[in-house]
Length: 291
Image 1: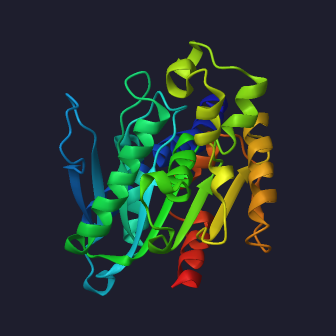
Image 2: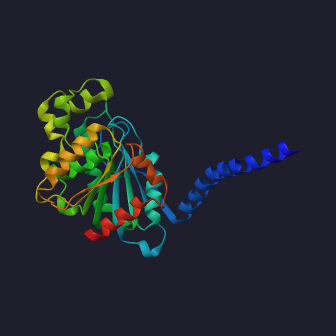
Image 3: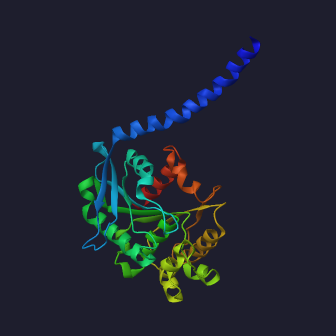
């Protein structure tokens, strides 16, 4: 009898723990569903000849007080050859519940597109949002961009390189989350692209393309304010590129600094699964400062 009693006492906390793991996400899902409006698979490309053109999703608050709210455009990562916008519904839901209208952008991946085509699509998504987000309770005058990994590269390149015709003055700020590719010219000179990870398709073997693909070369006095997160345990290539980028950025934004987090590359994104994560408040504070 004593053994059975001990077994019950030992097992109960474990059952309680597993129940919490199951119940908490369900409760969060219900709360999100009750307070957030979601618009799915909206086309944003003009005159596209792509067989399956990419689309975007929009998340906004149902509360009247959050109408005309700041807008956050998010571009996902995945090494430029993987990932889906649908994986990031939690990001849209959590910010929308806090009064931010979120646009999550899908784009064509390598090998079906190179970095330039991805950047052009990102630019079209930004322009579409600027022209249409007021219909979804967002304020086009408060337009912020963010991206994790490859997505950080795309939002930075699209805004900074004049080729993509995004007026930096229309972007209130850029939030980089462990961004990759900020200086592809430097990286690929030391690690020439091969077919691995479709890098030869994404970047080509032309060093001029590598430079054109690198946001670091387009920083100037018109660059929007940056908030930059960097994982202390991330990939060395990301650390190197971010440090080079920050050093150049300081020429124009002397107070710019990293927010360093004790995380690896993937957890830099998955931390946003939890709506009480401190990053939400930090980012919203950054947005309020630019208002």
